[in-house]
Amino acid sequence: MRPLALWRHEIRRAGRAPVLGPPLLAGALVVITWADHPLRNLFVFLELGLPLTAGLGAAALAGRDPAAELQFTMPTAYRSTLMRRLAVIAAWTALVAVAISAVLLVADGWPGTRGPVAGQLTWLAPGLWLGAFGLLAGAALRIPAAASGIVAVLWLVEQLFGGAFQQHFVMKQLFLFATTQGAAPEEWAVNRLTLIGTAVVLGAGGWLLSGRSYQEESE
Amino acid sequence: MITAARYELRMMLRKRSLWVSLGVIVVLLAAVGSQQVREVIRQDDPKGTMLSGALLVNIFLPVAYGCLLADRLVRDHRLGVAAILDATPASPVARLTGKYLGVCAAVTAPVALAYFGFAVAYAIASGRFAALGWALAAFALVLLPAVLFVGAFALAVPLVVPAPLFRVLFVGYWFWGNSITPDTMPTLAHSIVTPIGSYPMQELLGFRIRGGETIAGPVPGAALNFLRPEATPVTAWLSIGVLLVLAALALAAASVRPRR
Image 1 (spheres, each protein chain N blue to C red):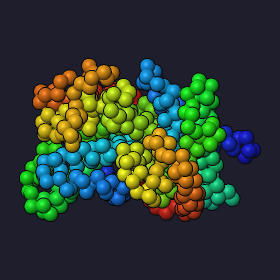
Image 2: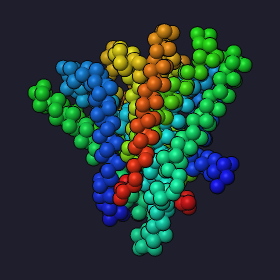
Image 3: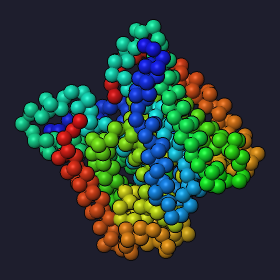
Image 4: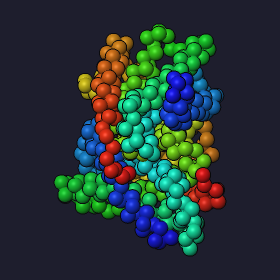
């Protein structure tokens, strides 16, 4: 398959959720908050909404192919196929994030506390972390419904128990929503770098597990 | 209908994903929210403890079982068995109702296990066995309506949008519609259509957040206050009724819509 056709195929196989999810959620948020600070909420969406769609998209990658066993007989490793689909999700998420950032900068909605370049870590760090966690959960369970549920609840727990995360040293470094829940600038930088570092570890775990051969498994 | 419900229940209870995901989530909640769980357990009042526990369960677990149930109806078509099932004497409506009751019963099992496990452990440790009565009441009035509401929409909506996209939208809705305070942005929280059961929790069971803050009823200056009538026992029953009617409407729509 030629590269263009291959990537076109992988974009379709990555699923509609990570592609349609970000614009739909962002659009809904802007409509709901139209009368009251839509730009501020759009910035919040960068840290909350985009990592969620990336995480749920990554969690649904493994275990969805109807004949995955066949893919293990191909010269191309199945995990490479999954990584290509993950790359599609990551690229689309980044594109939406940059577009939203541009809108916020043009409309004077970008918060002054973060520069426009370093401020991209607002979505990049939690997006990478939750995406890597989703990949790991999906590869470990190979049941998209179960992996999605775990990613979703983790996201909700971090959102609603934010205070508890902020009080504990280790949990504070792994807190996904440090920007919107008001971390101090020096703590914010450490938090973002820790998230990216641990995302690499989680992603490596997901990459390793996604290479396991399929056995008889039932949902 | 009963056969479909029984079969769906047995099939779901044998699903590894049901127990694995809800088990992981309960462990995750206990670990990450250990401080909150400790605060709940330390309350002297068994009623407050059980109701706080029910609120925690009802905020988090529906997200998980909503995600799990999202493919239950569409999978009959994906697996190619829908046409065979249509050829059986059972009517489509009866099969849909049976499937709905079966999946709701199946997700109720781990929810009940987690919640009553917590209630029994608390009752034994504290010697306050009144907690079990409060747990039963909260289960019937708050947790069950949430299962029935989420179950109906998780079965019906994936007929219109793909299950993975439904999960994304459902998680977004759940956070927006239940957890955001109404003075922050227009939200369904604190209203009679809130599936975490704000009205019955507050008016039928007497739940109050520490400091006496309410979780149901009109919020001064908030949008959508027409969905937040004065919180009374009557509006609490109305809230349960509205949730069940919405669930029935979702199922009715699913039964008339030709499936993909």
